[in-house]
Length: 265
Image (cartoon, rainbow, N blue to C red; front, side, top):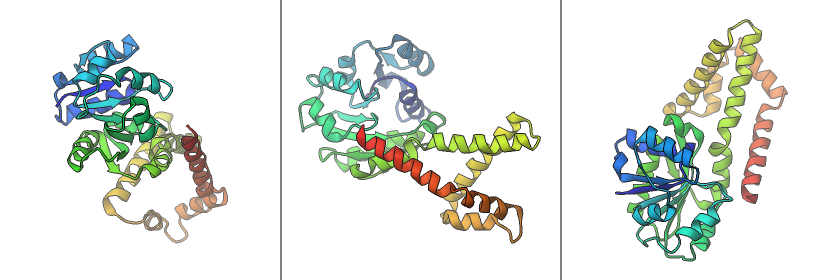
């Protein structure tokens, strides 16, 4: 299987790195192109993949073709490759806010096998979260093939396309919210006298461990919260302040703004 990438930025490099680390494909079976020569050179040096200057060459060779460019660049790329794509090629777009219908229109054909997905930056450390949907031309077997590639760098699950904007809010953009939370916790620890590097480690590990508990225990987050809140203890006082400051409402409002923006892209 030949896997192609048009666009070799951080996210594409993370995806390629995951596939290589999990030995799903070999470096010689990955070909990529990027209009920025520096990005292409870095990908070749870091990952050892095949590089070309031509998007059409990538599109012609790939059995699975990842489109990993900026939204404003996508129409140009689609027009460029529309005449050279094979009908059996599976096209996987990680371009934010661009629907399957938009991609089909750009390729001037409804016959192509199209997959749309939204990964997030923790893919860089193989802990990504990716929502995936496809058009009717993609078989179940082909979808499993794509999911295997995407699961090489974290969680990947199918969702209806109508929920892709929600995916942007809950996983695509949410690392930024989590980083802010970690930073705020670390700042408070620094104010209490802890050295900043140690404060970041403690705050980040607390978030990592808490998230792992949700995933591995299957317990409701509220139940896990209650397990930490001893009667008359320190945690319940902190929770009370967070409730008074409207933490839940602030997070929900932020996500609503994110999802609404995604719908307008």
